[in-house]
Image (tube, rainbow, N blue to C red; front, side, top):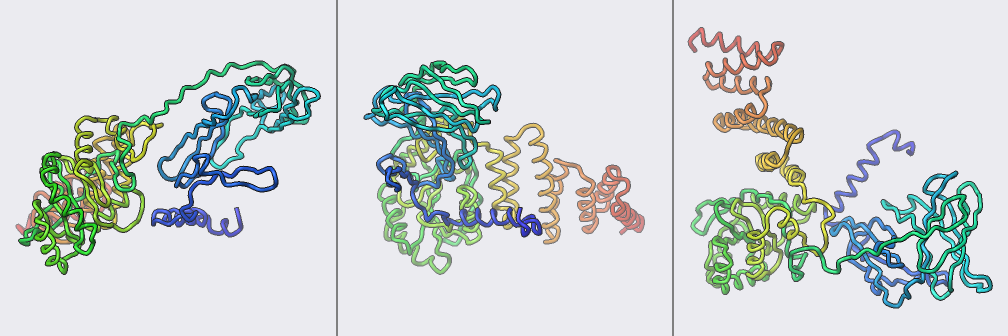
Length: 526
């Protein structure tokens, strides 16, 4: 640790927090470059063969591990991205390679460390060939956030049979191993002097992606959240000026954001109007378009709707709801990027978001998602949700974690929305985790109650006080609730709450003083 870091121990952590925030703001550490694969040309330079090798994905690559994963005698790659898909397996399918043009060895230490870390292996060809001489070393921790296989792989090419290997064990002891053959895998045990053949059964790797979703989906325009996250309540005004709230409950609905200033928005609305029958057949009983242009754009929005003969509901979304949608988008993608239109949300019967669509889309997309929801449940929906092909290497996304993460996006400006996500998380939590959540939810209800009291809204405050006490009967909650009721003249109820507070904490002096004041007022008949 540097002297500067010693003087300020938070310096390193704060720096990383700032870097990650820049990533969430849509910035890139690498200029949004594709992954690159460089081949040593044997003349002191490197050639970029990324595209030829199929390794030029547009991803933020991090960790790399090299291993003969399918045991077919050539090296494959596992690597991890910061962005999805988080883990990739790139199988070596080079058809020009001859079967058996390799030797693999695994070292086992006896006097040195068990894994023989630090050992050097020199593979030596047949006498007189003068061609084969290849050197590998056993290493650990040499790659960023990853570790390649301890099996040392030697490609033989056209250099012929490998017959022996010279091992320099950690500590400097040399040992010669005989009996190596091309196309084989061998265990080299320290002190034995002989290579023991090891049978490595070929792994069968499925060529098709283990995912139920169709391959035609565009990940940049179509996302299905793997966790059922309810859309925050959206306020809007219809063309008559009446206020409404979305999403509703009872049936699926498609909510679309658009702007009269955006030609793509108008084009999407026109296509939907022309294909209104297809959307009704798709089983979406409610389609509503929410204009984002504000009061000043209401007249132009109405003109557009009249021109295209919009057959569904529409209105103008309020700015506060746009802010809530921005927070939702940030939580869903972990990115702080502005909302862009056209943007649509497909919500289920309970208001949960099933699909997010950017840009233009067809009715068939909605039909497909609705059908998938009908057929899939639990792990089935989990398999459908990813925007790209692949296998899951983990269980379904933890809904508790997802909802807690979403709650944090709303903490500052939308505490009631944050609270609703925590209550949804509690429904999925068990054991100690459920108890911790219950305590956190109780605390938040208490804070909301105090805020409503400050705003002189005792009925709303009472609702949250009651919910807090139902989850966690704390003396602090009873004290604040009792003093509020006393201030509004409900002395009998206030006295009862203050007595309960003192039963829980007999030394709570503010509760004692408040109770004495209430009792005095009761005696005076006030």
